Image (cartoon, rainbow, N blue to C red; front, side, top):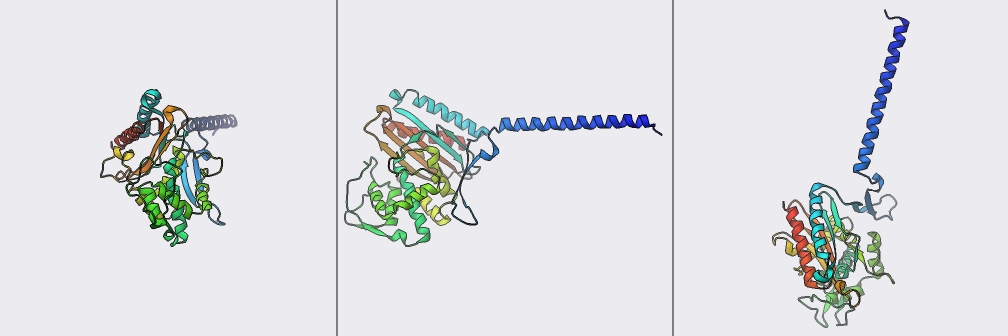
Length: 341
C-alpha cells in the first residue's frame, strides 16, 4: 500500500505530465496556425468575391463567384510562367515590337482555378460591349417572350465608331429587322449598323441594370471612360457558362451565337478546328496618344476542350493590328499546349 507521501509524489508527476502534454498540443496548434497563415495569407473571409442579385425578401441568388487571388497550383504556375515570359519579350521594347500592353485572364471552368497577368490594366473594350447588349435583350425576353420580335426599319446613318473589320453581309436599306435578327448580326458579324438599331430598341435603364447587377461600372455613364480590365470582362462569359444570370435556355442561346462568330484571326487560330469555341473580339483605334499604343485588339471566349473547358481573355495595345493579332494567336497556342498535356 502506497504511503501518503508517495501518492502526493505520483499526483505531482501526473500533473506535470498533463501540463507538458497540454503545452505540446498548444505549440502544435500554434505551429499549424502559422503554417496555414503562411500558405494561405489571405483572410478566409476575403478569399472569395461574390455577386448576388439581391432585391428578394427570402433569397439572395448567387450570380458570380470568384476567388480574389489567382490560383497557385503547379499546372497553372507553369502556364503563368510561360505567358509572363512571352509577354515580357513582346512588350519590353514597344517601339520595335509594335506592342505596348498585353493582359491575360485564364480560368479552368471545371475547378474554378484562374490566373491573370497584368489583369488590372484597363483597356477600351470596344466591340466587346456588344455582348452585354445581347445579355440585356435576352434578360428582357425571359419575362416577355415577344420582346425579341420587336422590329425596326433600317435607315443608313453614320456610325459614331469606325468599323475596321466589316461584316460579310451588310444590312439592306429600307428592310425591316427584328431585334432577334439584329442581335444575331451584332454577335456573328460584330455589325456596328446593327448596334445602332439595337440601341434604339433597348431601354437604356435596362442596359445599365445589367452592369449594376454584375457589379461592374457603367461604361455609358456621362463622363466615364468605357475602360474595363480583362478580369472584369471575363464576368460576362462566366455568368453565361454557369447560367447564373440568364436562365439555361437564354444562356445556351447566347453562347451558341458566340460560337458562330466569323472573326477567325484571334484566339481561335491557336485551337484545332474540331474544338468548339464561343468568343467575342473587339478592336479600337485612337487618333491621339502614344503612337505605339493607338490600336487595341481583344478576344475573349470559352474553349470547349473535351472534359477540360476553359475561359481565355486577351486584351492588347499597340500600333499595328497584324502584330496584335499575332499576340492573340500566340497566347492561345501557349494556353492550348498547356491544357493539352
